[in-house]
Length: 466
Image 1: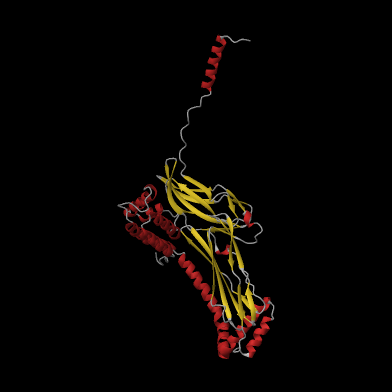
Image 2: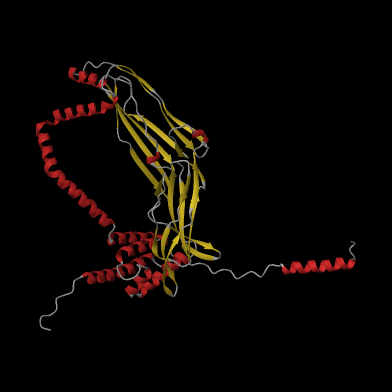
């Protein structure tokens, strides 16, 4: 059927009507900002290598300010080592959709130990925040779960043990050279391994093996961990002593330490070279001691440590004498139980002192001397958790209200303004003074402690003749 111009014109009109009907509706008004938010993230991402450090960030935010330090839960994952970088969170501010939020970030470090998929579950955080003109708000938020996958590098497949790190340093040392060794001499060997973005417990143990005729006595390894502003490293120190038990030609086998270089993406090997040396006879050695060493040389390696320990005990008995043995026995029988109780008492006393109200107030004073408003607010909230025992939460507003101090009220408001409203500066702006604020809080502390002691004091006796 042939279309006439009239039909074409009517079709054009109908088509234009349909487009207008499908035009989008006017945009709705933007949603009001939420007073409290929570988020989580992973770094470096969702695909990592076995043994590589993964940083899990847990952040809580409010568009007013925190009146109490958030309490973060412990993180545990199967087949992974989980650590906290610091006891307290990091404070900063951030603008979200045109609104300024006070943010506190908690950092965890995860070291996956197996090639599998890991899930960081939702973590609950209790938050207490200010609501201008209203009582403070309390809410519990759950963080979004995060997932990542750990895999073994292709180059490391078939390797029993390796370290995943951007840098590994291995230092080997001996307490003497191998020249002129005679029967009865000893050589001590120390190997120190240091790895960035790792911890001491993840560095591989070394197996020191000596040939027959050479006593091998390894010591327990020493582990050290260091952290500085989010950058951490681990150290493992292995030590062993070789005792020359028989004359002859010997060789210490080489040791290999494998590590995966995250910077270049390659498997590297640190090699501790083999050492060849000779042991000459020792004519100055007493026949009894020579026979003892020859006997030890025939003992299986599994029993060598026991033989060496027995020899040292015999020497100690000869040097110290019967009188020292009696004295040590008396100390062991009578004093050791009391010393053990004293150590327990001293450890408990130090723990209580470190967690006392006075200790936390001293930390607040140090924070005021630093003039860092973030540290000042964190120290104040931590001290309030220890010092305040009244009804409700231990908040800055409760402290100000109980103190009835106009200067403290003004200085507290100035601190909040400098911390959460003052932009990007680290220090409070004039005329707010950290020293004046500390003095005002110290006055309020005296009143608070006086009320606490008065409330704890038992009531007096009633008069006999009212």
